[in-house]
Image (cartoon, rainbow, N blue to C red; front, side):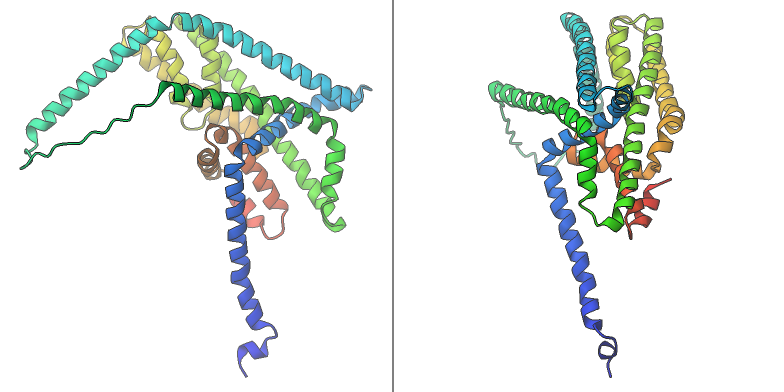
Length: 359
């Protein structure tokens, strides 16, 4: 008697394993395609979810004071919009002042670029002197594609318009998420069998704590780095220290590339004041110090215990979501990966994936 005959359903079980694996691969591919082509919708929803979790404690505080949740949600969203408009207006006025003086900085940048190009041309000439000449010189066909300025402007205007339209949806989504939080949670739990609802509720609560801790921690660390950068730029006597300090504080939160990105604004502003290379090295050293302290001291203390992702998971998450969604993927990559870890921790059969992503 064969083994398949001795074990009931042996052939069916062996055939079911590759089938399930194939179904999972196909399902993952469908999800990936959906996330790519519906990126604008998904990113808008995820951004609204992050903001809603960030503002939810204020809504609950107002509700505990006797204010209806709908009215508290409306006041909270209006406060968020007012603060956002105030910050953007302040930055806009400073950016306009900087734009009026941009010709001076652009002249310095052109001079620096020409110096680098001349040095590269000199190095290339010396390299050609020591390399053997080719036996036969072949003509090089150079094809230049002239891009229409009008089409370029229309393309950029279209992308900006889409960004503005997507941004206008965020306050409405945040309001509905805050006002209908209990109804949404109840409807979500009803999607699962009664035996699993307690576990699903715990997972959702933990996801909420992770997202809220991530957003609040990032805001706190950003303000610390922005304040430290502003004080340093004031000491260095840079123009527009508040604008440069805020931008550098935000850019310093970018993992790995934060040092380079945060040093760009003060270096450009310092080109009108500094003639010594020591000043530029000092800026790079200080920005590296801020970046190191922010990501290795403040970030683990304030955010690390909430997110609970190891360094490899953070790196892979940033690479994947950045590749999929671009710049917004770097913003949403860590909270999305942390949410996936929480779901894996509470999903039967996926616990090893959660442990691998964790610390």
